[in-house]
Structure formats: C-alpha cells, structure tokens
Length: 283
Image (tube, rainbow, N blue to C red; front, side):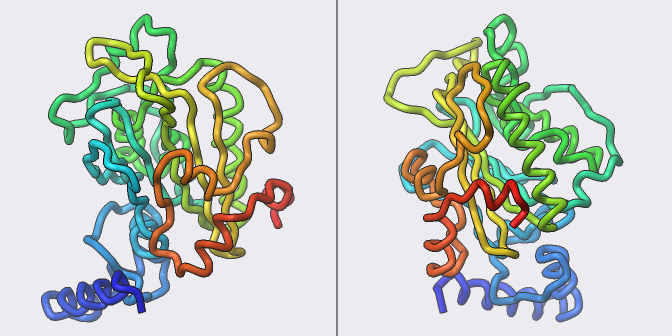
C-alpha cells in the first residue's frame, strides 16, 4: 500500500473517533459519488459540488514538480494553485458530473478579485490590454450553484487569453468536455497556462504575465483513459484533435504531476496514450 493510502486510513480513523462511522461515511459518499472508499480518503472535507472532493480522494490534486510560487485555494466548484509571480493559476482542477450543468444559477459575468489572495489582480489589469479575461474552469461548468458560478469569475481562475482562442477552439474543448461528461458520467479536468522561457509580456498595474500557451488534461476512470491538449495563445481555427497529446507530454511541458493518487500502473497506462478518435466516438 502506498504511503498516501496509509495516511488516508489514519485520517478516516481519527474522524471516526471524533464524529462516528455514519458521519464519516456520509462525507466520503459525497466525495466519491456514493461509494465508500476509506483507503482513498485524503485531506479535509472541501466544497459541496456534486462530486466536489472526488479529485482529492480518487486521483489526487496535481503536484508541482518544479519550485514555483504557490497558494492552494479551494473554492466551491474548483481548486486553484495560484502563482503570485505570474498573477494567475499554476493550475485549476475540477470534477465534472452531469449535475454541474443543471441550470440553477444564471451566468454572473462579474469578474472579482479573489478574497483569498493578499495582493489580488482586478479586472482593471485587463482593460485595453488586447486580451480576454479567459476562464480556466468555465462558468458553464458551474451552473449548479450561485456561489460556484460567482467564484468561477474570481481573477485567480482567469488568464490573459487571445480573443479568437477564447471564443473559438478553447471554447470548443470546453463544450467537448461537457459532452464527454454526459457520455461517461464523471471526468477529472485540470487546466492552466503555459510559460516558456524566462521573459514574458505583462499587462496591467499588477503585471499579469501573458501565457505562451494553455493546457488542459482530462481523465475518465470508467472506461480508464486520459488525454491532454495544448493551445498556443494566438488566433487559429483547427480541428480539436490537432491539439491533442498525451498527459505525459503535458506533464513534461508544465512540470506538473496531474493525477498522483492513481495506482502507478493505471497512471502510467492512461497518461502515455493519446487516442482522440476514441474520445470523439465516445469509446
């Protein structure tokens, strides 16, 4: 058994002593969508999204392999690892289930500084910059709850993005992820910016760094498969499959280990494979 699994057992044991079996079982069922998996439980209870904590319990939150400025922030519909140097996320992770698309909250469109950040970016930093305020976790993935919708407009979930990309091929991938969620029932998604080299363009008084590209990785556990995508931060209109790559390739590009809690054999198998045709066909 991995060390992380042992930690999970200890956490569950402590919680059971404090609150009883039924209470802990209820927490875990919320995390895992109804299946009681105490070996997989790690960390604290967080969020109240449908399958909110599943990314913690089943696949693990992404881990930075390179030293970066990092502040982990848990919001209702996603988790963000915020970088105070680039003034945007290192990554944003969220779990998709069909329940998240139920229209409970209308689109907010009110961009706000994240109250969890000491020196937050504001929407003024993007004015007259020539870049969109591009969501990493899309607003349309947070229709299930008013708070989740509003928090999707926090600036820690936003990056300077080419307008054509934001409303074009990047949006097409967002829509594809929702289609795949309806097909498979649950997906784990991580997205964020890509920075190459050491010098970058900056915008606004907060000196928000402009990414060279954007990534998104998608994991399905039933059937077991994963896929990555990388988009240059520029205008373009290409078939979605031309952006596809393996998760391993995205990890090499970003220095992020995306699904660290997966069993090693499964992680190695799914992260080394890129079969866009299988995703498009719903296989």
